[in-house]
Length: 113
Length: 113
Image 1: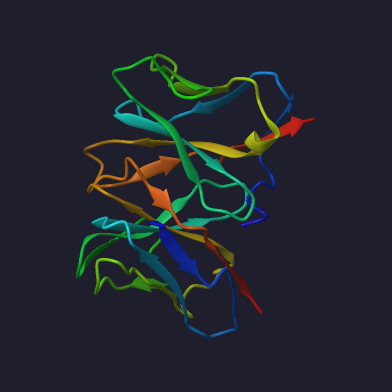
Image 2: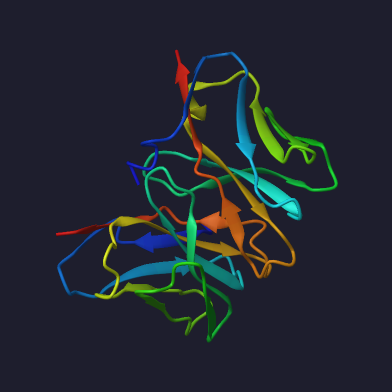
């Protein structure tokens, strides 16, 4: 669990700045996409999801953007806080795909005080 | 508190030994899942179960076995046939039969002695 963040791309941001974490997905037929946050030694935590018929969805301090043309997903975190430091990964799923999610490998976000 | 409980948090396996990882949920969810997480990789599905007394193989089921005798419980056994068992194991559940809203446990780190 503590080694999950090794070998991952890292994004370092100043506290208070906005963060943008990107994800390229693989299946153009995916129906929904999910962002998870995973802190060291813990299980992933759901952040926000978006359906394939949407381009943008906003939550509390987070926004997910979906660009189906280039199969790209991004997570924007506004006013990044030290508690946002974690590994973030995306997942894609399809209602036809027998209960399988495809997970990305993740990006480590480090927030500098 | 409602949630998913995994135990133990750390587990060590000797050569040729079978070990069982516990997963209990009190969320009244029908579906439960086991994932394996390796450093720098996305989560991979080992087994899933949509209903009591039924379970299906995921992408990497070889060397693992599960049971679903109760709705609340979905234990995973890592058998001696699994030659590379060192990983972080995550149990999850979802209210519906699709993994759109996965709730994860805190994980078990399994290491080989």
